[in-house]
Amino acid sequence: AQSVAQPEDQVNVAEGNPLTVKCTYSVSGNPYLFWYVQYPNRGLQFLLKYITGDNLVKGSYGFEAEFNKSQTSFHLKKPSALVSDSALYFCAVRYYKLSFGAGTTVTVRA
Amino acid sequence: GAVVSQHPSRVICKSGTSVKIECRSLDFQATTMFWYRQFPKQSLMLMATSNEGSKATYEQGVEKDKFLINHASLTLSTLTVTSAHPEDSSFYICSAIAPTSGSSYEQYFGPGTRLTVT
Image (tube, rainbow over all chains, first blue to last red; front, side, top):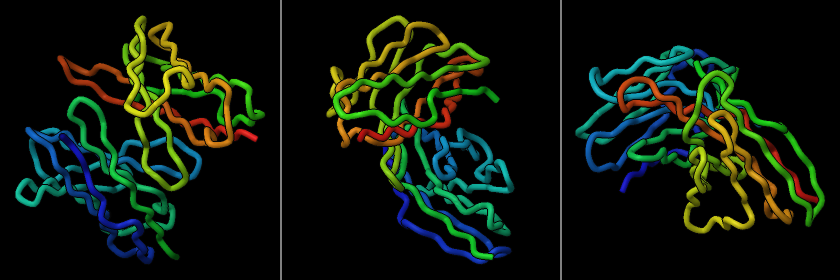
């Protein structure tokens, strides 16, 4: 069985501050892990993925994520958040199919 | 990157009628497409997997006679919601797989279709 958990429904940060969105996974074998962002009434936009290799993955729009095997985590990070980063973020794991976390709503206040 | 389109982006229909949603891969051939359903501020729930030229595989709890999926070509899959009811109102997102190298692939998402049944 495969699953991901996003323990926080909401994350609120001030613009310019670091942003972290948490994700933990459970999967047998090597995980393929993804982060997507969704703006209101829009489809999903791909941010980044981890397949193998370097544990620190850099993605779109200044986001990065760190794969931590011992903690089974894949937290999304951005050093300096922007108001435009306010959106719904999904962590996902792929074995045969993509399974999504419940999502975390990020609000960045000016 | 590869582009997946959906049409229409929004549709309002009356209860009891049927509505068709199209999903197209614009610049690649997709042997496999997926249909998801999303309620407000919730996660995406996989409804079915659509393979070109064969019957769709539905997830547990999804009524195949209500949500008809046709994957007639390598660039087009359609979802028809038959005899729609207000509880079918939702955001429907399709996704298509584009092969990259070897057995690897990427999954691309359409912009979604907002269905409102009145």
